[in-house]
Structure formats: structure tokens, C-alpha cells
Length: 230
Image (cartoon, rainbow, N blue to C red; front, side, top):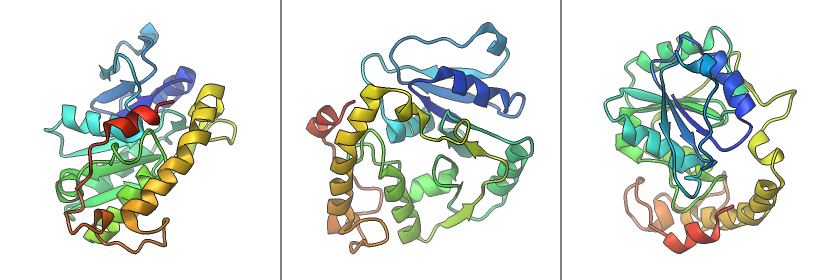
């Protein structure tokens, strides 16, 4: 399970407790660059860390990093840190992912999801060059899932996003990030239009940038990452 986190570590701890004994390996991508440590009560959890030293890897980049660090896995779950899982959800996700159906994703709105090796081989990683640090990266991945004809399985179960009915608490809890998102959201919106020829559900291109290249194709953009940091 790959868990990007940048703040509200209290919610990360709450989420982890709902999964005690249910996950073979947690890969926490700790994007705050502060050196945060979990309390000692989590010492028995199978937790591994990815810690960028200077700048957040973004949501898609964090998921990609977790997959790259565990290439032996048959499939991966990724999740926001600000949600909780119900008692039956881990077993049901395992059941759905272990049905041999070819490339597939199980998700509910991309606040969490599970992807298998076959899907990553077919359509690639999240596009963390074009759509950084977050937003429209999920739409982009879903567009490629649909174009590839991969299996999409919606599942919510007892999974609850947010705390006290509020989601996206990473942004809501930090004025600097909220202001950063106000700036980068329209930038990513425009970049999505350029990549797919329209907004989500209005796309006109069937390959990235109408290039004819495979669905996994993306363009490195160092300046863009610099300009869209929060």
C-alpha cells in the first residue's frame, strides 16, 4: 500500500489503525521534508519510507515512486492519508484484485485505488510531468484506462474519505497549500486540455497530444515542475 502524505499526520495515523494486520507492506511517501516519525505504537507495522529531501514528489509522483520501489508486487493499492477503511474492505480489495482479468483498476474517485502489473505495463505510470503536483492526474489516468479498454471496477465499501465529512484535508489544513492549489489547478486544467483535446468527458484526442504515441507516453518538463511547486 502506497500512502502519499505531506501534513495532517494525525489522519495518517488514524488511517493506518484501520488497517492494522491487514497490509503486507506500507510504503509511506513522506512529502513534508520535515523528517516526521510515527509514534512508537506503530513500531510493529510493516512500514517503509520514501523521503524526498527538498520538494514534494506530488500525488502521482508518490504513487509512481512506491510502484518503482516494489516492482516484485503483483498489484498495488494507493491511498490518500485522510481516509479510513472499513473492517471488510481489505479482504474485498484482495478478492477483486486476485481475480485473473487482465489489466484492471479498482477505485472510487481515485482518492484510493488498486492497479495491477498488467495495467501499468499497458498504460504506464501517473503523468507527474504534465500534471504536477495534483489534480487532473486522476482524470488523465482514467482517460488512458478507458482508451486501453482495461477493466474498471468501482468499489467504495466502507471506505470514508475525509474527517467529519470533509475531504481533501491536505489542502484545507494549510493556507500555503490552498493558495498553491489556487495557482496550479488552472494550470493543470489547461495542460489536460492540451494533452487530450478537451476537458474530462470532452476529450477529442485518442493519443497523448494527438501524437500517435502510446498511452504511456509523456514529456519531461523540468521548468513546469519548478513553476508548479507549492
